[in-house]
Image (tube, rainbow, N blue to C red; front, side, top):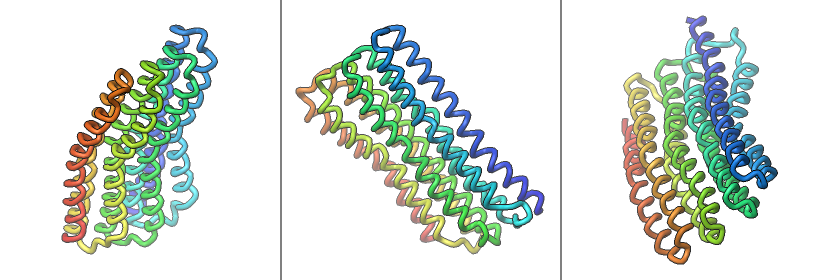
Length: 317
């Protein structure tokens, strides 16, 4: 059984690096492709496109950096001879938290940079404004994996105290919760970020309206991952004394994790459509923003329902 714990330990290390590296590699490739394509369409914008692409790739690499950091923490923090029967299974929670969020974020965080490259090709004299948009939206997309890293570190700090199967399953549930819960909001934020960057290329005069709308809408799109983080923190701090209780916790993790996917993606698509219309009709910005935010608020009620049921499964199990 000790050998099995060691196998799970090394598999967790490989997963947090490998999964993130796959998605980041693909994401950076998309940015490179868009930069070459944009330069071909507008050779005069070569310097602006190159600068933007380099910064976009650097931010896209955040998921890989966090994966490597977590792997080093696991390698240096837990020696094989110190592994117990339950530490290996508990580390699966760390792998789920980092790899699930990293798989999504490493790929989709490249989307705003892709949109920004094409936007500069259309509006080469608005490079600074487009770059600012890209940096803001890409930074916001990294929020879910930062939350996942926080949960992973909390799991890591508790591993030495885990001495039952039920407690191991609780650690797995907490990692699954935030990892799965990162997927929908990440996709929604990336879709919105790409459209926001491209909207500047449609109409550079709509910059002020789009900037304020982007900050508010991105915060709304991120709301479901905050719910997942809260549930993850409850799972970390709520002991499980029986297998049945730990299964209820896994149910809570699945509930909020799956419950954030639809709202995160739908909220991002709704805000993206509003961005395009604001760029085309900046004079009716107030009407478009109100309708979009109302729609996003209604969409997020689905995540609120999942949040309530998840907490109920944890607190009243």
